[in-house]
Length: 183
Image (cartoon, rainbow, N blue to C red; front, top):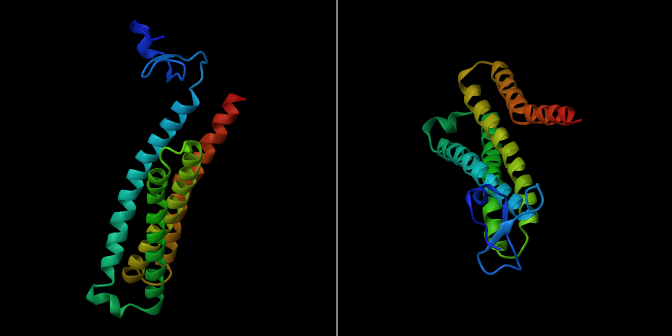
């Protein structure tokens, strides 16, 4: 049965295996069909990945160029260690944030979207943690050069706490609040 009429375009739809090719019909359940939910979640992951990838790639490019500046060789051993760790974190974050696209491409058509969405979500969280650590390392490297003594470490600690609150604490708090409201 093919949907027709003005209300048909607003009704939840899905492809039917018993319908002719391309036909759709109304979903009897008021809930979102599993296939649509997975497609929506996958599209959300792609959008989030685009935003995060841009940030990590710009930051990683900046980090790669730092080693070629004349001032770099005059830095102390501590700064070189921070730099190496930060570059490794940036490369790892890039890998984690790009991995969902590669996984999807290699497994496309294998009817594994539920697994792909689950793994991609975890990779995104991992990539965001690595991005936050990369930002922290970059700040430490920069502030250690321009701010005297322990102040650089304290400032970076404050920024990292802010990231933890904004990126992880706030979502956890909102989820708990939503769960409490639903109960």
